[in-house]
Amino acid sequence: MIFDRKEKAMPDYYYRHILDITPEDIRNMGAEAVAVDLDNTAVFFGSFRLEEGVREWTRNMMRSGIKVIIVSNTLNGRAFILSRQMCNVGFVALSLKPSPRGIEIASRRLGVPVEKIAMIGDKLSSDILAANRAGAIAVKVENLRYVYERETSLPKYAATAATVAAAAAVISVLK
Image (tube, rainbow, N blue to C red; front, side, top):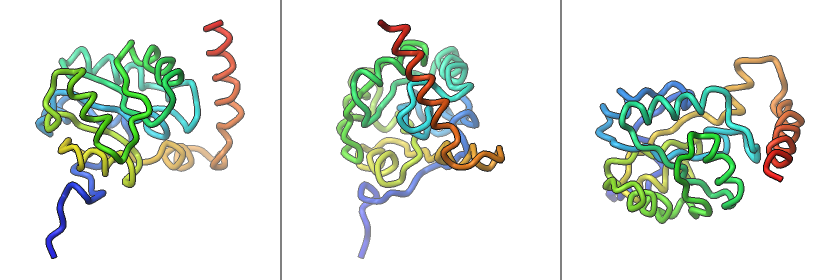
């Protein structure tokens, strides 16, 4: 039996961390834009604060002519807050991944064909499958928690208190 690539959760590319992906890498993939997942890709799950370095990574992509948009299953308000931290990029919230819907919307908003978008995410069952179903370039990164655990001696959920404090600080600024 021959399997349809659109129904496979197989990435086209794999990186340890989103910060390891350069504009040159994106161009070499044949992409003109990146769609970025939020949870455990650009932020810790549920956080309202970008992972250190993601803002500068976004700025570097944009300076290099790579368009950037968030495609996430998160709620609109949270996507809005994080998009402001990511240099005011656009976003597609409630994207319903693994449905290709969010990537297709991102394609229209950016004016870039779906096959020229690199979807960057940590989950095979949602981000990568959605990319394949849409016909986008599927780029898998490791879950931030696993990257963080390997680089520190802190237990898996040690960042939770900091995440809650950061969310409270962001919300108080918005009031």
